Image 1 (cartoon, rainbow, N blue to C red):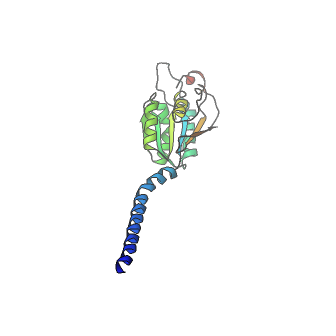
Image 2 (image 1 turned 60 degrees about the horizontal axis):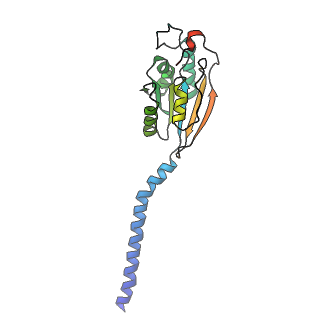
Length: 198
């Protein structure tokens, strides 16, 4: 009779041990799945550089004009407390100067990216900034290109005289994206040579 009592008890212990083992294995594997699903969406804020100085056509890297410097200050005012974790801008003075007041206010360095290398920028953003709010300053042709490469809609090149467009692209964990297009700062149009491409 004692052996009959031991067998059910032994089976129960084995069953409990198996259940505990399954529970432990699940607890270590399942959080990785949950953490990816629970990760917040990535928010990408994009602007074209601010207004440039009127310079000779051979100068391909002009500084910002006084209106452009004022627009750069406006970006720092608007986004100074928005939770931005990373900032990207091309190698040109106009993009660097556009984002400098915001970077200084946030205490962030600006990651310099080469203009025209959108695929490399997108790869870097996807690998390093998932779930973060990031800020990108580009050019009238590269901003729409970046939006499309990140899963947003195809947009036309930004008109030469427009410097006040602001795009907020929210990218969900499943890769779907929603775009909000707004205006910021003064709608003053640049004139003359300031309207040269990029």
